[in-house]
Image 1 (cartoon, rainbow, N blue to C red):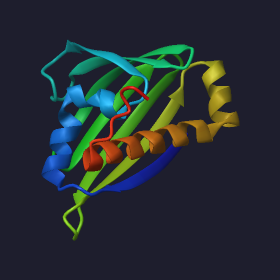
Image 2 (tube, one colour):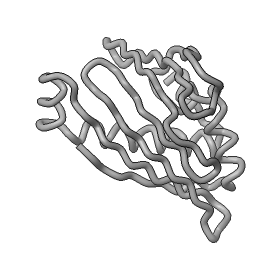
Image 3 (tube, one colour):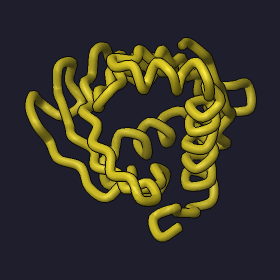
Length: 151
């Protein structure tokens, strides 16, 4: 399953990247994030890995994030792996004429088990809505300082 989403964040590109790169900010725009742990490699460099632990309702989820390409402030490509899913994510960042940041995110989800294949076929909007939610939560945090930490 592939799809593209985008959003305009009303902060300059350099400020946007500073907020995005700071792992301590993750909890302010990634709902359900309980903790993260550096696993390997130099942080922010191709090949580095971190483990992200989420609590989503009654469900616990662990993701491993791997940086596959980086050329900040213009792009950051990542892979996310969790039980049943491999996610290839390509993030592109552009300055707008107004001095804001346009974030374009291309996602490809590959199911690695039958259950997730079924979910992607029957409910693809769940994945798309989650992406939009994270983009909007990042926008609110970057522009207004609104955190989802205790949401």
